[in-house]
Length: 175
Image (cartoon, rainbow, N blue to C red; front, side):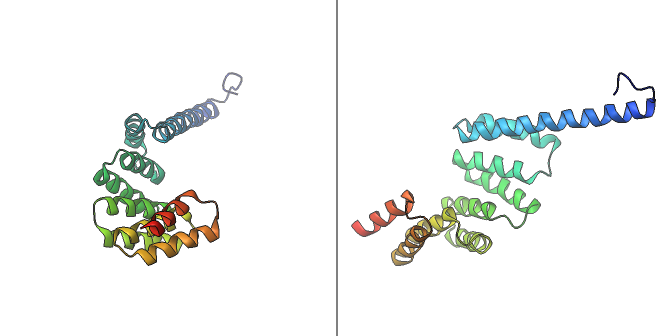
């Protein structure tokens, strides 16, 4: 269109649209690469890519979530929590954000705060196995073994092949 049109206004509009599209595709590529890096154990590389992405895309909640996930995987729970809180400020009702915040709080030994985040997460997604597992683990940390056992049993009613629930139930029963 650009090379064949004679309408300068339409050419300018097309060029602007093309520029926006190219920028979006570049951002999508960076985001996907960062996700793959973090998923595959190259967290610091992924974090660096997402930081660059956030320089021009500060309001993208899942970018904050992704950087939080990267920080959590390298056990930088304070930075992870900050990133998840930013994600939460941009996307309020997403169970996975609350779940990740609970993990950070649990690792920072703030068990009551962790429980509060997990309660909100399970309210949003009642049969989420990851959340139920974290509730079980939290109950174990609080030495509420019977309650932990109930969470792991509940998981097995949802997915009777869940290896994490089986492993924790076995651990509880052999103690």
